[in-house]
Image (cartoon, rainbow, N blue to C red; front, side, top):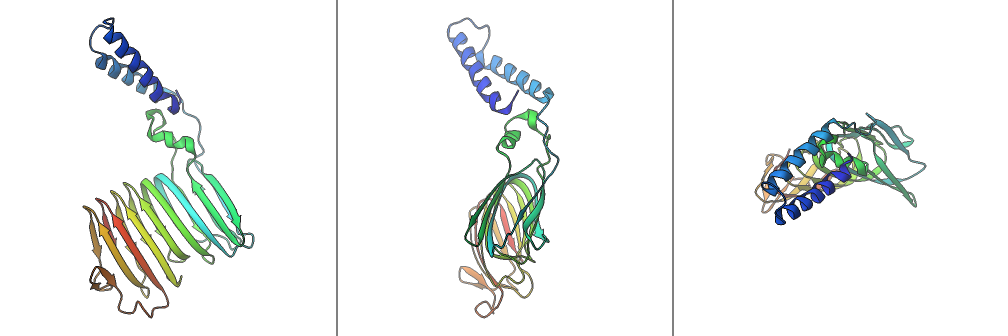
Length: 263
């Protein structure tokens, strides 16, 4: 049974059972029958052979003379690893467990690339029969010489974003129930970073020699900043040499019930 049919079938059966119950034609309570039918269908789904999915799909995007790029990664589950190391003629290359949907657009001398899990794979988390049938692990190597805007959207995932060798000038990170570690660029000039953390654990590493200004607003979560490097100044934390530093980052943090650490 396909994932997209599971819940509609449950609703149809539940409606029929409630109708029979209201007419007095159903022995026992309708809820008891509904749970029994649901358990039977889940068991059938666990035994039903799933659609084969590739263990890992190898994907790359050539630069073709682009002077800069925007790279958006929408990774809902599994493990995500991003680092430098792509070949000089490529924007990125990578291995994508479970496959990947790729959207590439050219705007003048800029590339705009969005990578996301195939739509059908989101059903893995709504249908028990799909659990464990594909490893949704992504390993992405990015060109370290290209000025880059990067957006990362994660769900129930574990992410390691090693941007230290990259020229990321704008970073947007949105996380859900995840664990994320980010190493910011060493020599990107001025980098803007916006972090939105839900029920997440986020560790942000500012490389030695890079100045930072940090502003954070947390809900029930905790913000922990290394004040030896970034002394508190009112509602912000800031390096003493932020105004004159060649390489510096501005970090805006908004969090929910998780924790964000800046080191």
